[in-house]
Length: 460
Image 1 (cartoon, rainbow, N blue to C red):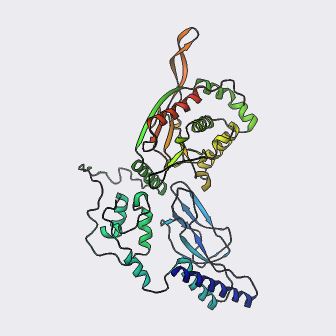
Image 2 (cartoon, rainbow, N blue to C red; image 1 turned 90 degrees about the vertical axis):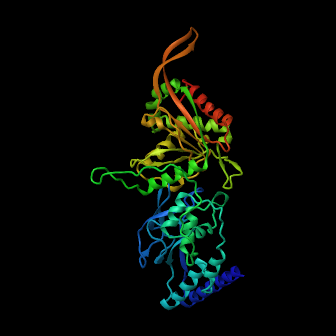
């Protein structure tokens, strides 16, 4: 019935606008809602960094109206139309769900009196406000059904304490996470319309895992020790890493490989390759190429786990994320889309573009979305090997250690000999919920085989 009333009101409203349009003999537009845009398939919320415009300012279509950020990239949000900003619903540092209305833009040209009437009606339709003043309270009271078994993470507990929420109140919030887990966005959505918090004991004894170990207080000397406030991206990375370790039981496997043929070929061809194609030939496109081939052989590694934790989703596209360090020291993961369909020239061009865009903070949102498997070249920083944390919602991540020359025993036609070889370690961290030792080990070995068996006579 309520939906019917909304539809009926919407039809009446736009009929009213059309009547005004006929009177004024021009084309009128209603109040246009500006929604938080979708940033990627795995991203459910974004943080507002700053507004470029204020209420009452005129904005042109496609002009930047605000800047937002996710745990992966900062983005500019353009205006969907030309008009005047009539309302801004969120402020800088607010975390907003994707699809939420964040501002309203007046794109019409009708008189002030008529405009007020239309504005009031459109706002109600757009924001789904109840028609009766008491209905909000009734709806909210009816939703206070406590779930005493709801798991409360330390982050949720922290937010609840800051907002003076009771344990019953927090446990009454419907969770949208796996198995009904209450997420940060669930709490923020609830707080926006919070009017009647339940009176109960303070949130002092939440059901969270406790340890008997009490860490000692951190002592420091002001003016002597340096205190560095985490920036927004570092906080997001920290949350993402903790979430990954909490979600996926990590297992890491290692192998050592001889990449002498690949190293010698690359060193001999990097200058001719750049002269022919205008692209630098680093080791990264060679690594991406080998990983894409191995994924074809073992598609189970190119997967995700459904939100309810009961299904394995094998991805058809092979999109390789490459963990990249930013000048600030933070980390971002641009994505080589459909890596299995690109030749070496195409891979080199894509890798170079993504690396340059990362360093210059010019990555587009679509360039850090949709990865299905990630590699991390820890050897870039001189690390022998690494135990990387899985990039959720993927089920595995490959770390590539430094390439080092050292004497090795090799078998030749003359028998065993000692020779100088280029050696490196590979390590694969995988989600043991869905990837067992056989799949993880076989995939890792296959990547190693492709790199070890590199054709030294390959043409560029």
